[in-house]
Image 1 (cartoon, one colour):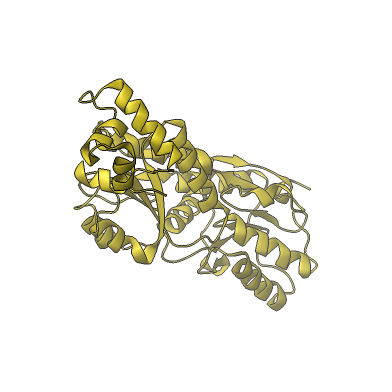
Image 2 (tube, one colour):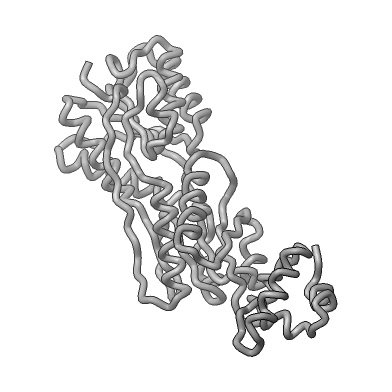
Length: 327
């Protein structure tokens, strides 16, 4: 791969002339531009976008900070961001980094904007980063200048699931909590409590279980332990804070001879793909994660183009499948 200096020497012109040609400047003739561009292709010359960005005080990178590739949601959101940046013919690249690197990424000004997808990210650090570049949050709300919040209606999603179970005659609706550090874990639980209160069902903390994670393994372990210790389960339905917990819970119930939905109805949240293929198929709250990613990409481009922007709320809907139907 040739350098700009080698390209200039090959074309017998100055480096500045090569720069004019590759940036379609009117300072040089059309013939010279075409000759230099043709030579650039022959020599496999690739312009240094980062260096050009520094001169223009832009890197043309949008940073996406994640906690890790732990499940299908992040993959779909990232796919949505990347697809939308391409669809919009933007000059921006998506630069994905793990949470531990976020301070370095922003402080070194490697990005023009950062999307924070790490649910455990400290609010004070996010506010500090927002003093350097604009920040878009992922399903998280923080008050601050230069911070643009995007959220899904977590509370409404679980609220609707709880109401649906009540309408089926469920009286003892249990809840399986996810990670303590997650803000949407709290909002989802609030939806559950609200639905019980509005329907005069007494809240019972003995049937609220804490997985302290959003994994299938923890869903299995917690519910398996309860099923093993109780000859008769203390609940007739179970709302799980996400689909992975629900999948683990259903496996634990089946392993203990408990039928879903005949004995216990189970619901999740997120509508991950495997939920529609398992047996029984999983009732859930649906979020279009790719469209969520595309929404954040459009918001990022609007911010970078200095358009007026505000908070964005992504709608949800419940999807009823076999795991919560009346048997």
